[in-house]
Image 1 (cartoon, helix red, strand yellow):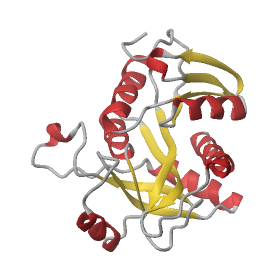
Image 2 (cartoon, rainbow, N blue to C red; image 1 turned 135 degrees about the vertical axis):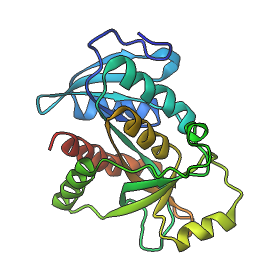
Image 3 (cartoon, rainbow, N blue to C red; image 1 turned 60 degrees about the vertical axis):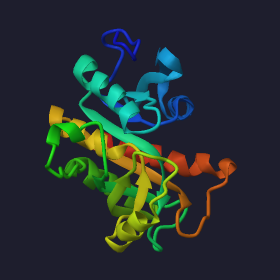
Length: 234
């Protein structure tokens, strides 16, 4: 048991999927895992452990933003021995070629600021995904015929952004989408010698204003979860 995770020793698997929303963790566990057991509900941040195709998997909510994810990822790695951490979540599309419902596999994650920024000081550290996970997820997505984009994303430290000039430069430099957690996840995984990847569903588009209706999100998010699971155990 840690400050933020109430699981007993042995209740967390080495492979952890991390949606931001704890209720999405509940839905994913009940939909995709066998014998899913609630192992954490501290502060309402739900976590479940079960099996997928015979492999033990934990699905643990991370909350919104890099500071919140950093808390859970640190404790999962340091106190529970997590080795593979895959963020499954939504993002906003930024390029014209990226459409709502498409998937983004984040090769890199740029950021203005993160909880780890103080460590690097003047260094602009470049957080990146684990190559093996990225390759496996790309293959899984291809087999499913999912519209998938692989490249850089932006992990913002604010939700209500007021920097249209920065967005313009990111679009100009090929950033595919924006979310709020992956850069810190990638940094922590590198620090502790773990594997990490962000598999993201485009739920809205910053350029067009289009957004995925809530009643259609479940099917799109389901593809993302299955691709993440297949990648973890390839």
